[in-house]
Length: 183
Ligand SMILES: [Zn+2]
Image 1 (cartoon, helix red, strand yellow):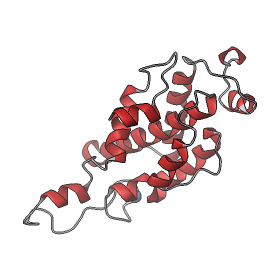
Image 2 (cartoon, rainbow, N blue to C red):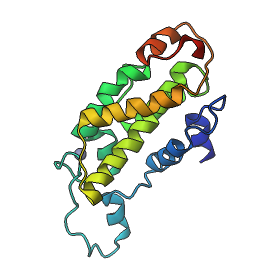
Image 3 (tube, rainbow, N blue to C red):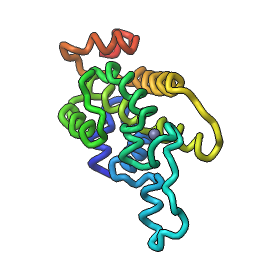
Image 4 (cartoon, helix red, strand yellow):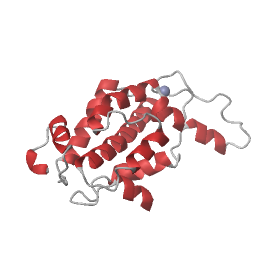
């Protein structure tokens, strides 16, 4: 857990702001979320689930960690739309590759580092929420709605932060429509 906090939380003025996301992200990275593949692994007799249920988001592939983040056609389209907002438009799409990519900028308190971590953490959080909403509450939102939800929540958090200034910051300030006083 400590390592995850170190990588994914900004410890400057917005210390603690991302705690909800960081705890969830730790569960994602450790593959501890209760997707059907994990529940099935606990079922030693394989007696309760003969067929692994389909992903509630795309209804095309079995529900699993690997699929949800971000092999799923629904979640991958949301992540693809968000890439440009991370300030790293070429960031990969696979969970392990994304984490490795973020590790390289994680120690910096630049806006690029904080934005990238927040977008990734919020994406995992709201995609998991959408998956559960469809599975347990029969509530369904579109890819565009999830995309806007992630953007809105990340921007609210960014407005509480201030950043070290680097030469590439202005582009992200413009993309996120942040006040110039934040850097
Ligand atoms: Zn899916």
